[in-house]
Structure formats: structure tokens, C-alpha cells
Length: 120
Image 1 (cartoon, rainbow, N blue to C red):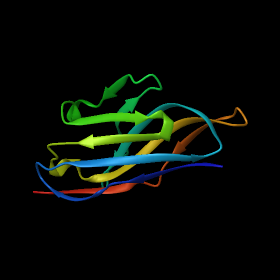
Image 2: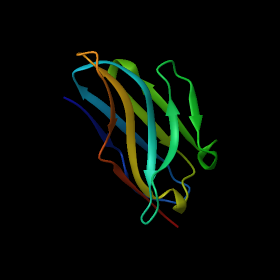
Image 3: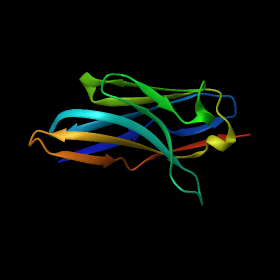
């Protein structure tokens, strides 16, 4: 069984920074794309950023220049460095990954999420 677990959320003042982590564990052969999504109360889940296995990145327009996604393939971990945080960044942040298991089966995984609250 393979799972994702996020950490690093919390309460921060506007203009502050947080670094989220998401570690994959279990019977992992390889991991393809890894991504972060977020869901604010009463809103649909939205994509934030993606990083490929090779390190190419893409960002949603509202976070460009403020957020940085990175990964450590040796640790099966993806990070999201969030700077210049705004109250509208408040949400539950979920990790997403496409994992190839040791059984050579591809699974699309979601983590349970970590709460980020930005106060004004």
C-alpha cells in the first residue's frame, strides 16, 4: 500500500511564509508528476502547482512568484515553499502524486491535507 502524508501547515500572518511537505511511503517503484492543490471552505478544490519527475514546474497564476514547488526524489517528498502569503491563500492544501508501485501498477494518490490559515 502507498500513501501520501502532508505536514507543515499552520497559522501565519499576511506577508509571512510557510513550507509544506508531502512524503510518499509504501511499495514505491517510482513517482511521476507530483502536485499541490488547495480547497478553501465552500469552494472547489483548485490546482496550485505541479512538478514533473524531471523537475519541470508549472504554477497557477495567483501564486506565481510567491510559491515554489520542489521535490527530493531520494526521499519521495514534494515541498511547497509559500512566501508573501495572503488571506486568500487560506485553505486545506492537498498533495497529489502519480505513483508506480513495485507491482508496476500506476496509482493516483491524494493526501489527507494540511490546513493553512493566513490572518490579515
